[in-house]
Image 1 (spheres, rainbow, N blue to C red):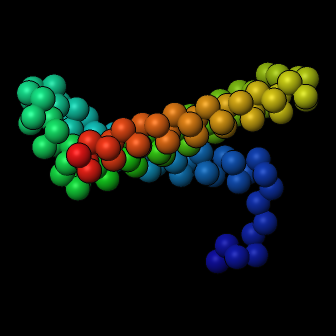
Image 2 (image 1 turned 90 degrees about the horizontal axis):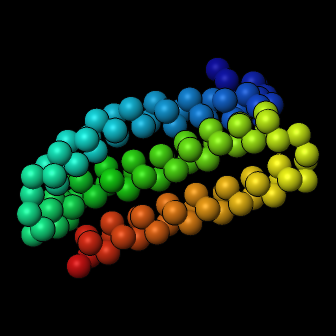
Length: 116
């Protein structure tokens, strides 16, 4: 149905941003339950909770997709409000490096708890 449809860069960005928002919706609700369970747990129970595969997958997805969603949102702000193209390119590179680094660190921390 859509194979002949060519999306320009802005339209593709718009669709991907919407897709990430749709993916985040159920993940946020699942992660809220995990956080509520963590808030009333002691340290050992919290470790056990994070070591459950379902919770691990939810946490990894919520942070990975969340950082992706944030990156796309801030990219739109930079593209709309930073008029100097060179500064905009540098800000976009810095943004992507920072959010990718944060996502890697957070997921590494979650996985280090899981494999502990």
